[in-house]
Image 1 (tube, rainbow, N blue to C red):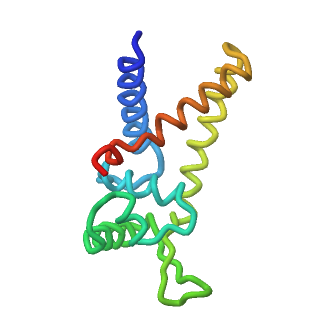
Image 2 (image 1 turned 120 degrees about the vertical axis):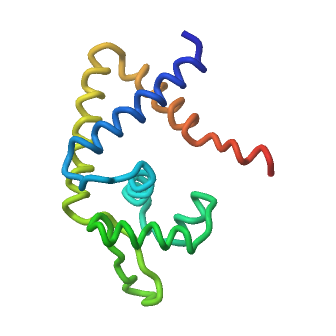
Length: 144
């Protein structure tokens, strides 16, 4: 299998797994893929703010504010006032939603254990570096 075919397969399977996970776990009904995208970014971004989220996504701050407010209303995300700069609100997952994300982390740990039964630690370390480099590839940087 070529790299491109493997990458497309990986991306598709990951998206499908996430969609299945989203419908199987303790998420409320009617959660959209965009909701999940926002929550995924909030989950992995320390000190996430609406403006930082807008910058990452390349969309307007008012649009992100509207989406985040919807996630707050659904009880998935909370805004926490910064202790130093009281004008700033940090975004974080509600504790019960963060717990669901922890279950995904356990799944990842199980996957790593299975991979280590098939591949050496060195193989997995190389794969990890390649995967990170591929994830960090920014297609938009070509236009700059």
